[in-house]
Length: 210
Image 1 (tube, rainbow, N blue to C red):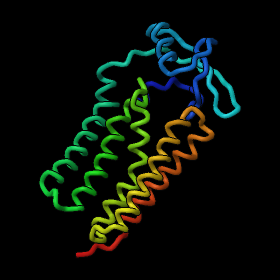
Image 2: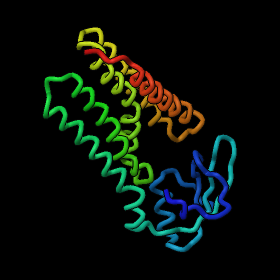
Image 3: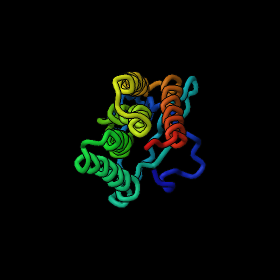
């Protein structure tokens, strides 16, 4: 978000689950948003949050999300994500015979979809599952691209890459399904981040063959 959205002196609320608004228990993000909308711009809403076993309350004024906010926060992610997917697609259209082009496409789609669906994590949360699947697909996509450069396509490399897609698809589903429990969600999410960093480092050190 924007730095101006955070009231001065607000305690850290990252990775905390909203359980109630103005003392009224709510079970979904849509209900929380509706409660804030009902309170109206300028009103102060008190959120009850849970982080692990800790419960605390935070009072935050309701603000209107303007087009200027969209242009700063969301538009760059949407534009860059669409550009990345477009570049990957253009490579395949130009050279569909190259395994490297297909490897670049899956990397571009994974990264691009992650950026395109990233704004939905602010709301209305309809594409959360796609965001986490795209995030989890990034490590095997990088592996596919790396193998395309290092070895000619073969049955064993294809099996290894396919197995990695299955493993990380399961991990992505686990992250999406347990996103409401930070104690489980965060270790799974950090595992995906670690796998992405490891895949990038290995691909950058891999020797190039001709």
